[in-house]
Image (cartoon, rainbow, N blue to C red; front, side, top):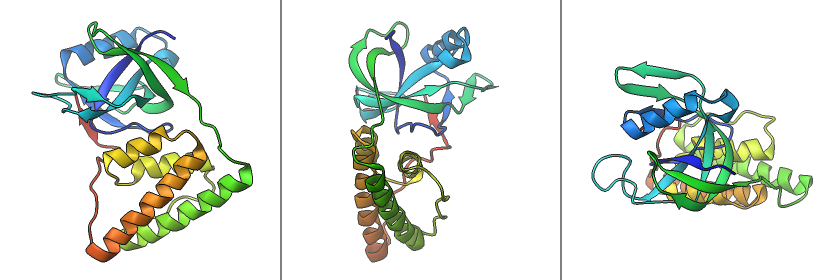
Length: 215
């Protein structure tokens, strides 16, 4: 496929869900300008979580994870010299090769498909277990209930997008090879976090998926 523009960020983007961004660096403003010349369906760039470094300033983004999510740009809001947007996650990808910045980071990528990993009955069972684990965590922390009727795929990504987890856990869930693996991992992590909250009142503070990342 053609090179995908890359946007390093301090969190992940999740397929099917919006992420808040505010952009002011000239190279990324150039990226938005270039995307604006394309049909809306083609206005994609890849969000990669930063493994080492920072979003801006000294020591920024010295290393990123290899798996990320392509997001599609819709409406833009200009606030002075800052552009605010909420692109929606479209599809996961894996970086095959980073390219020279010209003028912004780009990479050759391979798209990653969502595969079940087990039969429909097995997926529904794991999804129910994840809902039980989430309910226990929500009770301990005061979080709201999950909507009913979501498919296992949507449930996994919704919990991943909203749940306050350390970045390494969120990245591992994003990288999971199958929906069954993703549901199982999130169920295990939710159980761990519920136990920590119940025993120590310790709560991770992950970036708000609706808040604006800086770049």
